[in-house]
Image 1: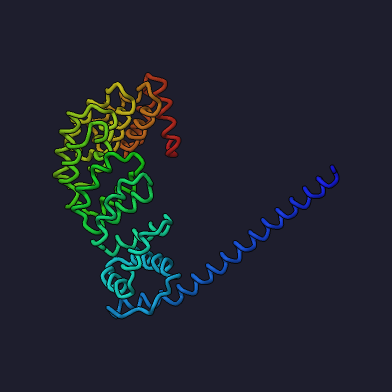
Image 2: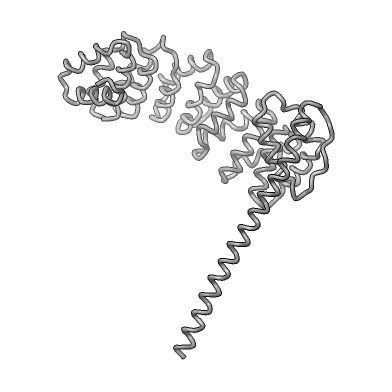
Length: 342
């Protein structure tokens, strides 16, 4: 009985190993076949698409349904890499029936196909899908929501900004870099006043997610607004967002009080702002910050001082010898060594 059990266990293990090996071989074979097919299609279609850019609205050869997803990928890659030729690419796509195929693919249950369809429809500026795309901007799935947001920005940037800015304020999961790229694509003239309005309308706990993008707005909108916000906002996140976005070197008086803020995160951002915008008149304030109780504040202060006095390193070395605070001396020595100027 025991011997039979051992034999059948060995048979089962060997069968399982063989099954896994066969599965791996099949996956590898299919993968190689798919890559060969993609290479073949790229050799066939890339010259056709590029020649279409030069010859205008020339009908494209028929595209097999099984190749449509890959064709979308190639078209998107070309669309994003060749600036200034989007209109001919759009005409070729419409002649090839990509808009109809993308609408069909949008209904797919597979997220990958839906994402590809959304990316294509956005670049085609397909207004007919607007009502389907807008609800997806609030979808809990990060990729679906971001893809839909990017698509509606491409379709109608002004209307999209009205819809998206309150969502941007709410969404903690949307990466700031991706949001900034969307806002840049929409354009400064589109986002400036809408962004300012959205900041005032946003709940105090969410406003910082919009304030951080004020650097993308027109300065004649952003600078006065930042002055007002720095006086009025109370949330630490909003204060640090204002300090990060501040670019007006002529109005550093609005920033100076935050060097003494009780929260070290705020003092850190204030020091960073001084590092970007300070002049020689602010040297003494930065020297005082070298004695801050928080290591990171002292570190950024030393970097800011070295940047401010970069043309007079002798002054920095002299300052290091005259500082009475050992923590301040050590930090200045540390930063000078980092910069190879110790």
